[in-house]
Length: 362
Ligand code: 1HN
Image (cartoon, rainbow, N blue to C red):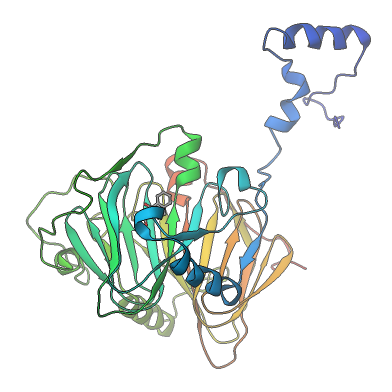
């Protein structure tokens, strides 16, 4: 449908023009005025739809994959989450991929590296670890670990641990859209751990402190793990001090401690806390986000659609869609983990944000 707006394409079909379109199509060319209003929308129109993936329905299927495939055969034993509008590129939303990976005690998945950037958020189980470029990182519930682009990484669960499930987040659809994705299996399938366990936390995890030795030139954070206990304590302390915004509640960005910038070049991450009964104001911005409910229960209104969530559920907010969050409990706070493509929006000068004119959606 052509809109009759000055400055926008509005050309009526004639037999002569139709013949002309056929002639240039035969030369693998086309008339811009026929597609201009589609390829230049007034504002972003996400092909992703707001989605909620309930953990209570997915969990049994994730566990069942333990009996069906081995990490050796599957490479990674993962159930990924597909947005109905983005199935062709295996995106959960926009240009972000997410999946649920499961591993039994004593299992491990071999080392590889790729151009995509990745993170994991631990959902349940004990004894999980990740090895990133020779640094072993131990992982517990609600801990968040990065496996940046180009870094060798492998995962496992210690023999004395329990079945572990974690959420993977990657920028696969973005890097594939840019046609820049390389993948390599480690020549020995396993890395040597050549640093003290959790050494990057010891080195870079101090409160507002950075070591005076060592140069770091990579584009991602030298701190690999962000632990839940310290994150939750920071959110609660900030809330008690009056920190917070109408649209986000108390929200803390996970950052590269050396720069204060995002943890990786293409993926940012944050944790937000909604006080008991809190219902935020709606806003929208460019960039997509995948959320995981780290604590509590509540609802979000996304693009006018209400999604009710409980702990461990995963949901998404597509680009430029209004969203607001509510904590349903009167006596418990709720915490939402998210990863997003905001570093890309900022780096490319594409970030825009606006509040909902009525405060909240209907
Ligand atoms: C990957 O490296 C992991 O390291 C998980 O656990 C999922 C999906 C596509 C490409 C690489 C992992 C992945 C992945």
